[in-house]
Length: 388
Ligand SMILES: Nc1nc2c(ncn2[C@@H]2O[C@H](COP(=O)(O)OP(=O)(O)OP(=O)(O)O)[C@@H](O)[C@H]2O)c(=O)[nH]1
Ligand SMILES: [K+]
Ligand SMILES: [Mg+2]
Image (tube, rainbow, N blue to C red; front, top):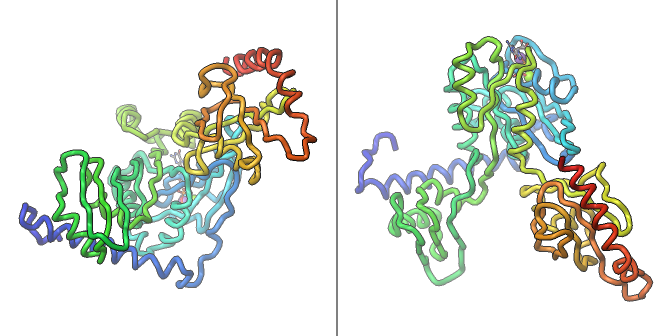
């Protein structure tokens, strides 16, 4: 590809080569998944809490130091590289939520091809809801590019949404290509060439944005992970003010120092924002809301709708659900009567009303008429107090 001149005439050829490369990369990763390469010792840590955050970075940037500071779990810290050899889990308690933080061995260039413990580390990253890429603020920023490339090559896409392309394979009917916007990187011929490479002869394709060849290949491959990533620049205690200031201005980046405990609160705050967790406080009829233990929802884990909430509380609740009363910023008025499709916001209060049991021994109707008025006021006050 590097030897091919880039112009209009070679565009199709290059596109086809990119597709070939993507296919081969996918093949390369497959034997590993099936447990072909034997020892996968100690890397599969059970999921815990409301979200999973993984620490990824070069050796000795301070990942283990950070885990110890944020979770209190001891992970070995030393000045030599590759101190950490396995995955060490800790828990961050923040805003009534529990977030699992995973310390990992350092990775280096070539990790995706299996250098060091690269493959196992990357496999854990794929299971995370958020990545903290830990960087040494005193070292060249090229490290960030190298790691990003390693992650890209195994199908991890950082800080961007999936391409807005509708794609559906079919059994017959040929390829139907359409677009809703002008395309500057792609055209029908190139789409067909790439599909040919994948031996796909029947499909509907609709470009809803000005996507690139790589975007289209991502959609066909279908196994990409779109993960948010926060770039954590550690060791700012050995940097000058100008450098720190410059780092702080970059998007999705935060300067910290574990040694001097600088900006660790800022890090937690940013982490929380990026995870976009939605805490929902449930309330039984006739009782006050449970403000101790929220049900925590997220887009990655079952969604933030009422249905997501029901599924998280109990498997059968969706079937029993009749309607719910909602207090909070997602409600147009307090309380709003909502269905399963309603999208909840952080700190909403929800009271779920179940369908009447056919046996008739439920008594829900009686409670309903009694409860709403006086409780509504009490709850609103409680909610207002919580907000302030
Ligand atoms: N100056 C400075 N040094 C730090 C800071 N945080 C960690 N270190 C030092 O950096 C070295 C590496 O720290 P570790 O926490 O072991 O780094 P790691 O990324 O877990 O390293 P590996 O497990 O080997 O990949 C240790 O000597 C730490 O004491 C910091 O904020 N400032
Ligand atoms: K180390
Ligand atoms: Mg370590």
